[in-house]
Length: 374
Image (cartoon, rainbow, N blue to C red; front, side):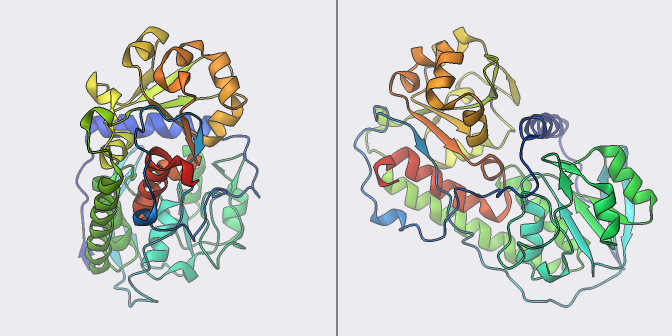
C-alpha cells in the first residue's frame, strides 16, 4: 500500500487562496449551469514566432481581450494501470486526515477553474468522470452532467444521483457543509492543494496522480509542463522590447460592478508569477503587496500601471471599459486609463494553473506585445 503525505501548505498561501476563491465564488454567481466557461478559447492561434510585436507596449492605445488557445499539452497516458488501494492525506478545511482510495471508477473532479478535471484527463482517466463542474470543458466530455449550480456551488442531490466512488476537490467549490455531507454519505472525498502558479501546480499534480493510483505519471507530466512553460517564456522574450524602459508596468485588479471597490493582486495570488513570465513589471511587487487587498485611489494613481488586467466577467459587470473608468475615475489618471489599455481575460483561465499555464501565458503575451494581431 502506498502512503503519501503532502507537505503542509504555507499559511500565507492558504490565506491567499481562500481569499481568492471566496472572491471568485462571489463574483461568478450569475453564471448559469449551461454557460460555456471558455468562451474566448480557440485552438488554432498562429505561433508567437509569426507575430510582429508593437514597438512600444507602454503607449499602445485601446483595450484587448486575451484569446487563450489550447489545450497544448497532450495526456501522458491512455487508460493507465492503476495501483489501488492507496492512502493519501486529504487537506480538509477541518484539518488533514488520511483517506484510503479504493475505487476511482466513477470520478468527480471539482474546482473553480476546472484544473483538477484537466489533470484527470492528462493522466488518461477522463473516461472515469461521471460529472463535471461548470468550468470543466474537456474535449469529448462536454455532455457530462453539471453538478454545480448558482455559478460555483455543489448540487448535492445532483452529485448523489451520479453515485461517484471518489470526489477530488481543491476546496474552491462549496459550501463546505455540502462537501462534508457527501463524505458522510459514504463517498470518498479527497481535498488536494490549489494550483495558482507553476510550483503549486507541480504539488497538485503529484497529489492528484497519487489519489488516482498513478503516482509515477506526475513526474512525467510535471517535466512536460516545465519544458512547455520554459519554451513559452523563451518565445515571449523574443516579443519583448529590447529597451528595458519600454517594459510595461502591469497591475491585476479584481473589479465587480459599479461600487468603486477594487482589489490589487500581489504575491501568492498567482498573478505575480504570470506577470514575471511575461517579462513585464509587476507594480504590486514594487510595493511589496502580498495577497489580495483593497487598493485606494491614491495608491493606484501612484503606481501608474501601463496595463491593467481584469477578468472578463468583472469588466462586463462594470459596463465595459467606459463603465469601469466612470465607476473608478482614478483609473483614468493612470497611463493604462489614459490609453484605455485594459486587457480582460476569461475568469477561470487566468487562475487555472495546471496544464493551461503555457496557454494562458501565450494568450496574454499576444494581448500585451501584439494586440494588433487579435
